[in-house]
Image (cartoon, rainbow, N blue to C red; front, side, top):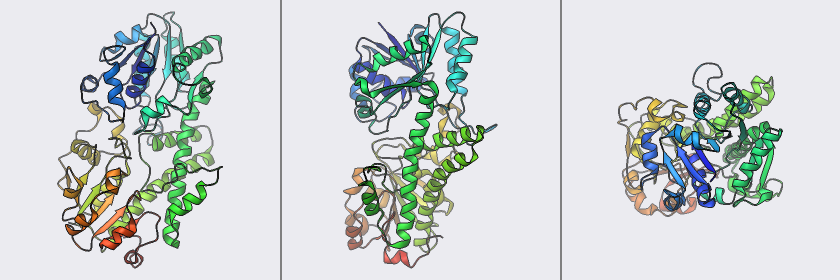
Length: 480
C-alpha cells in the first residue's frame, strides 16, 4: 500500500489530503502537524476550517485511509511520498523583510525528514515557495542523506477558498515539476499516477522544477493584477459618472480577456495574493530586474489605495468624522463561503475607522469574535505564523463589539460597511434596518451586493464602489 504523509494540517494540506484519500482508497493518507489543538479539531465534529463539502469527505474517510496525527516523525518515516504544506510567511525582519518568504518552517521540515527517513522518499513542495526553493531543500536532504535517495517535486496548489473541494475534484490543471533526470522523471510519474485516479491525463501538466515553482507565483500575480486593474477603473468611474459593472461587463465580453476576476471591490485579500506578489518582487530585485519588480509592486499599491479610498469615503461622507459613531461592519472574512480572515480588506478598513475613533459593531457568518479581536490587534504579517508564535492578543478593544446577526449590528448605527459578499446581505430587510438606524443613514457597499436604487428609495445614502455617486456624496470631498 502506498503511504502518503502531509506535513501541515492547514487550508491546503487538510482538504487536499482528504480528497486524495476519497479518490484513492488504496492509498493510506496521514496528515500530521505539531499543533495538538489543530489535529484534535480535525479528529472532532468541528473541523478547524470551513469549506463547503469538506466535512462530509473527512467523516467518510477518517479512520479508514485518512488519519490526522501529531506523531509527525512516525508517519514521515513510514511514507513513500511526503507533501510539505507548511507556512511560508513573509519575513518581518532581517534581509528581505516585508517582501521575502521566510523558509524557517520549510527548512526545519526538511531537516526532520532527513533525520527520520530510513527509505527513499519523494518530497513534494505543496506550499507556495520562492523559485529555487527545491534546490535549497535538495541540498539539505542530500547533505544529510545517509545513503537515502530523495526526489524533490513541485506540485503547487491552485485552490480558491470557498470552492476548494470543487477545485480539487475538477481542477483546471494539476502541475507537477521535477528534475529532468531518470530519478526525477520516475518521481513525477509516481505522483502523476496518484492524481490520475480522478484527474483526466490532459489536465496533468509536467514541467521542470523552476517552471512549476514560478507558475504558482505568476498565476496569483496575474489574478491580483486583474482585480487591481478593475479597482483602478472603479475610481475613474466614480469621477466620471460611469458604472464599473457595465464597463467590466463590456470588457469581459472580449474573449481574449474574459469575464472572471473583474468585480470591483474594496480590495483583494487572502493568504496568497499579496504574499506571492511581494515574493515575486523580491525575486525580481535579487535578479537585477528593478523595472519588473516595480511593475508588480504597483498591483499591491493600487490594492492599498482602494482600501484607503474606501475609508476616506466613509469618513468624508459622514461630516468628516466618525468619532463616537456606531458603524456596522457586515462581513469580515476576505470573501464569502470561508472563515478565513488572512489579509482581509476588512482589517485595514476597520483599523482606519478605529483610528478616527469609530465604534464598530461587526457581524460575519463564519468568523469568531476571538479571531476578529486577534486580527485587529496584530501587526501586518503576524497572522502567518503559528498561533503559539503570534503576539498575545492585546486587551480586548473597547471600540469593537462582535454580534451574531446583521440586525443587531446595524441597530442604532450611523452607517453600514459591507465588506464581504455573503449572499445573506443581498436579502436583508433593509427597510427594517433603516428604521432602526440614526439618520441620515449611510450604506457603503464595498462588494457591490446591494440594489442601490431600492436602498435609495428607502432613504439610505448609498456609496457603491465604481457606481455613479449619490447626489449627497457629489457635494462631499472624496478625501476626509
